[in-house]
Length: 201
Image (cartoon, rainbow, N blue to C red; front, side):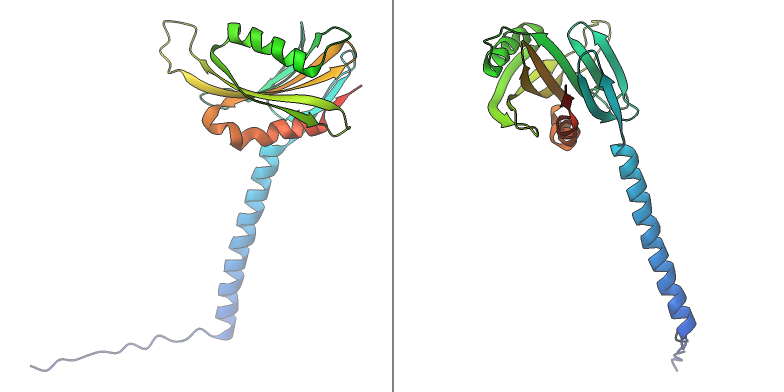
């Protein structure tokens, strides 16, 4: 039996075909880079929040739900698209005594939070120097959030939060970030951006 082997010669790409291939690959890489850049810009876009009465100005994420002017609350901003927990950025102002220190305020906050949140636990407490040189106290904590409506079945969510307490005369400014614990580190940059852009006047 005679075996016949057929060799098919594949013609090599000429100069123009090679350059067209390289150009197509380069265009695809550029398009991918532009797409990622536009997406990141959209995700990280901010808008200015300003409350002249409270003397607070800061950059907050664009498109978030904002509530302002309720009691001690200056504003709270929530990411309505986040699940299972709505990422929260918040600034509030509370009155304090003329001899109060940031540490006193943090101790009072801890007492209130222990009554407000289930399984509340303070994790860390450190001193922090802000962009303008003023001293503050930074505290991190965790708690468990469950659905208050007994007819809606929902798993308990582990929440991690951070507060930075800044004294301004006989007032304390409290800057807050809360997030579902597994996503806390990923979105912490939003809080740091709020803190870096915060103006108290």
